[in-house]
Each structure stands twice: as structure tokens, then as C-alpha cells.
Image 1: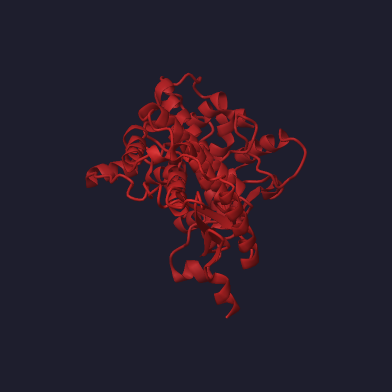
Image 2: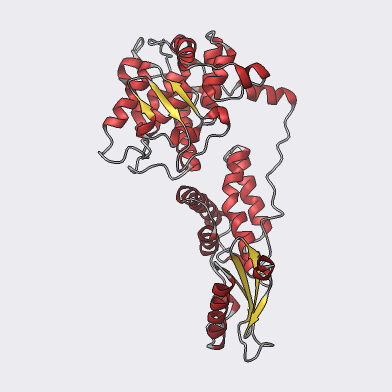
Length: 415
């Protein structure tokens, strides 16, 4: 019975309060209590730990309304698009790194809005057509994957829901009707795209060489993706304490910014010696301090703000490598495909499929693999690392389009 009382609505002065759940409450009142017919209906969402706390805040809303604090013109009170999205992000329960990713996606939207819809300044001016146009821009012009497009739209959809719930008389959920564009391709084209997801060993080493020369901040993370098959978030959340140089393994485990995708994703991954040498150099250049911090930093000297920031930078570097060095396989290649490159490469070099699945952190898919058979770190080391070295040999013949000298030992240059 006490729990039911905590959930009921109540009224304090001119303010009617109703619970929304999860500690959220909504205050509904007129902006001009002395002349409600002239005032504007106003809704405010706030957090309260108890009904007593909610009542105290309702009294504050009443006093402010009587004092005329909310009697402003609708145009003047309308937030800008930036302010609207930032307010929704601040009200979310996301961790700091996720909030940073939301804000990064917000900046991409604001940049597009300034170019394509310069007249849209305030949240009330934003319509569903503009959000649809932004999604089509990412699909047709930037060739973003559906998952990336979805993450780009997340802060916009958050703000749309937030302002619709907060002030339903003024704003509607404009982002809700917007959907990700459908991709209509033939079966043959889809099969060709699947085949293009994997680079050859020579092209993989060429890309890593390019990153080492032009974008050293992307070089080591991309190596872990391409030569060890790690997921992007597994790479970006890697900490100094997760690297065991004596055993030659890294621990992919739960951190403050990353949760393993499946039970099998929480694992120890043995690394090739030349990859360990690169990680040793990365750790050696870190300032002395907390070993639980992320080891990979952007070119600004700070941990990557989010998944999209890293993917955007790596995708841009891949496109530049394709244009300048003529590596045609990098055309329309995405950072996610480096994991597919690793899986295809080591399987073509003869690694056992079950061991590769365990190395990648995938479920083995049958009763034996899921419940009984255990793939040890030593077995993965014996199967996968020789396959990586066979697939990506030390000396790779250099194509004429590449400025590197023939027979250069890339592995020696890494260490």
C-alpha cells in the first residue's frame, strides 16, 4: 500500500505533479497562474527521491510561476537545436564515455544542418523531413553502415522524445517517424560485398604501414583489429593492466566503458610477438599513472571519445590510403571489416575453425563447444599465431603503386 501512495499524482498550488517512474516526476502548470487563460501550459520533468522531495520541488515551481519566471514568449523560450540535444543527453543515465559519443554525433548533425538546412536554428524549427534527409545523406553520400547510421540518429531521437514528454503542447516527437533507409541490392551484389569484406595479407600490411607513417594514433588499434581479430570496442577499452607481456596475452574483460558482448567474449587472447612489441612501445610512451586507464589515445593525446570518432578517423585514413597509394581493395572498406579480414586470413592459412571461433570470442554453436570442450590459450597460440605469420609474412613484395621499397621487413620496422 505505501508503494501505491508513492505513485499517485498530487497538486501543490497551481502545479499538478504526476510520477513517471524511475525517480522521475512531471510538473504541469500554467506559465501565468494569475491569468491561466493567457498563460502557456508548461511541463517540467524533474528527479525526486521521494514524494516529500517531489512536493518540495513542486512548491518551488509554484513560487517561480507566481513570480512570473515562466512568463516569456514561446519564441524566446524555444531552445536551439544544440541546447535541446545537450539537455536530453544531460538527462540521460549514460556513462561519461557514452555521453561524449552522443555529443560527438550531435556535432556531426549540427555540421550537416548548418550546410543543408541553415534556416533551422531552434528545436521547434526541426521537422521529420530534415532528419530523414540527414539519414539519407549518411547512407548515400557517406556510405555509412546501418549500425553507424543508427548511432548517428540516437541523440536526435533522444532529444525528440525528451522534449515531447517535457512539453507535449509545444513539441512533438519529430524523430520517431524517421527510419533508416532501406538498402535494396541484388543477391549477386550482396555476395560481392561479402567477398570484399576481407583484405589480402599484402594489402593489410600496406594499410598498417600507411597508418604508421601518417596516423600513428590509429596504427596500433588497427593492428589489433586486423591481426588479432578484436572488436572495435574491445580495442578502445584495452587498459595497461589487461596486457600481460610475460605470458604474451591480453585480457578482454569488462571495464568501466565496455561490457563483453557474450560470455565467450570475456577471454584471454594470445598475441603474435610483433604485435606485443608494438603494444610494449605504446605502453612505454604512456605517462606513469593509473594502470586501469585506456592505453590508446587519439591524436589529441586523450582516450577516444567514442566508437564513432575512432571509426570516422580510421575510415578517412583508409580512403586517403586508397587515393594516394592506389590500394583498390580499400575503396568502400569499413573499420568493422578488419575483423572479417583476420578471420578470413587465418582460416585460409589453415587454422582450425573451432579455435578461430574461440580466439574471436564467438559461441562455438554446438553442445560440445558450448558446454564441454575448452579451447586453451596454448592451443590458440599454437593454431592461430602461425596462421597469422603465414598469412601476413614478414617480407611482402611491394606493388608498383606503393612507395615502399621491395622486400622491406615491416615486422622489424614495427618493433
